[in-house]
Length: 449
Image (tube, rainbow, N blue to C red; front, side, top):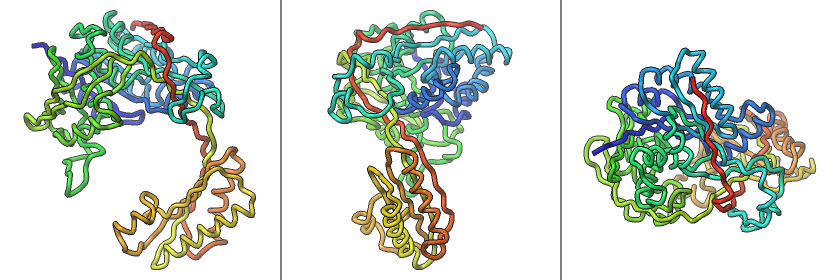
């Protein structure tokens, strides 16, 4: 029975490259995916594109391609990635330019577009924002981007036309895997049950090292060997929909039932209705079975028809966050940190600082759980405390006051403060709506080298 091997080369925009190269060199792969877009990533990429129309793709795209392209001259592995972000066409051109410079030839590179619906935003003013329940037209802040989570159709089209590297913008994360599997096995986009099986493969691969022991280890409880050399995962998917998750030998990490179960429930609300552009996958009857060292078989997943809508993320300028931090050490560290916090509150009043939200944390004491929970974990007196003060403001001027006042604690606050830092960040937030599928037209462009 035909089996396709797909490796995951990245699980987020800044992921390391060595495990991906190892997969390409030793993994006997048919495909490798690089999933590099988080919720806000395209909005931030759009800001870069506004400054330079030739930019807007993933920050590490060129770094990765410099390492990937020479391997493609030796290994017949097809690359599928959403590193195109806000500008897949420019990313495609850059890949061609780099291939020529590196002496790599006989490659066909595709760019999948159509996810960008920014020019259509005016017609969605009455659509409901998922996060707030209010109409989109009431959203405050300058809108920067609007991208629909499209499905695997453009990837399949590119593969049918012989593409070796496929660069997309916003696609649903599992689509990076659904696409090559649908192409290889000839699955119809109306075969929702099989698309559901493909979707679980994509869901397990999308975060790369998370399913091989990353973001999993808890020393003494859930030990993972050699995390410094974490190997990235491989999905072995067969014609009948059977799936095994594994990794390369002689790499760190582990693939077991627990790592797979944790990844299955990642970003999962209703297990019976995992909505994607291609299908509604049903994970509610999933079976996870260890069948060998670092080999886990996944079965029991089904699929139903999609809901006819595309989730669309709208990036907008929301606010500023001003922040300041300072440390105290010694037997009275906590008392001095709390005195410093009281001083800051009073100083912000005197300065007339206007903020929408203020947060004060004693890092190492209550920044994660607050006192009500932290007191049940430990009653030990901290030997050191780092005070963090942060405020959400409408403008940069008020945000700057926060860090300035924390820094002033050096000479105007309790004894022994040190390591003060301050920052101001403009916050790009995301609002989500659902738009009709028929509003999206997918395009695929090609270049050869």
